[in-house]
Length: 217
Length: 250
Image 1 (spheres, rainbow over the protein chains, first blue to last red):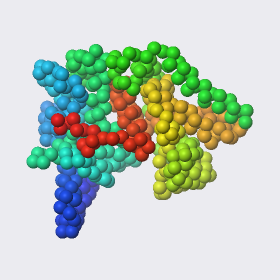
Image 2: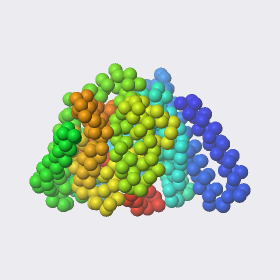
Image 3: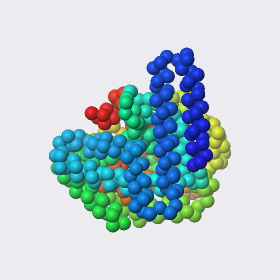
Image 4: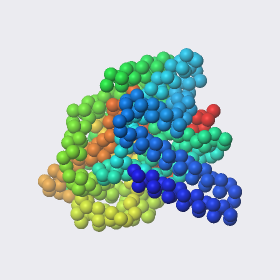
């Protein structure tokens, strides 16, 4: 992982130098797009480094670890946007009280998922391959996750980063092998609501049961 | 030849039974389905429950043992063989789809790796062909994708992809070899392919199985997204410039 971070830093440094030189001849729009890509790649490498520090930190209590995970999630992810999008079209129809309850429950699920996923990154390295600009709001930071032990096949991953003008970058989705985690979550949530006769409460109840199960483990 | 005919009959019979079986089930009225592409949702969910039980009792424990005990080199050899078996179908479908470079790559790889029965990838450092199936070829020919089908032990399909799978299975090179050894290999191939897939996707499948509220809906969503990426050069999906995430910023 140290090698990964060194590589990411050297790559981003190299890219920054190349962009600086190339911008003398490139059109301004192209140079701007490239600088946004570099910024997004830096953002993701910083996220991965922070996760690694949190996971590897010794002598921390459970509360301290959870606080660190909460801090990472809040600093790097657009939690509010992810929450809204994950409820699909039913978000608009939900009452204020239902939205509050869903936001609270979904955050708990998100933090528990993050905690589980973060623990799994030890031994894995992220090698950036191809990043792409999507419109004026999104950047896809692409790369491959490799198992340094060679036990797992390489996995293609894209971090979908929101890059709205004047706002800090935030991760809104992770796409693994062409499967968007956020779209999958939204489809699951919408299916639960539809199976529950279109009631948002059906989703709240299912989430509550899921959380109770997680807490009992 | 006799063995080949028997195999053909089996190949056509299985999807036919499943499709006819499903069409005799009453479909869910529109508006009550959790996805408009899934009119047989209740039946599909029952089959999914069966598949999950099969995974609980057989596939997951066997895959775990396989991962833990079989040497990595042997696992790689088995994965290579499973991939090699699909190369004739990729060659044919690439040609039918006009992707002649891919067809050449697949054909060449099949011939070269055939020297080791596909167990060793002798073209490891060469360009890899993209896997192409008859479901994609049918899509290119304008055949609609049909309904979502959960198939016993085979998992997620659409009517079109299931029909394509049956066709692709006919081009298994072992089908053209006679003798008891070939029959034994042919019989073992489907379970071995399932085991390899389960083993290679062990954590991803367990993530869906154990950490979802509705594993069925999640599996269906993942299947459609993955299939769309395989069909992207045949049926380009029109997405907004925000990559289908326009609603995120509203």
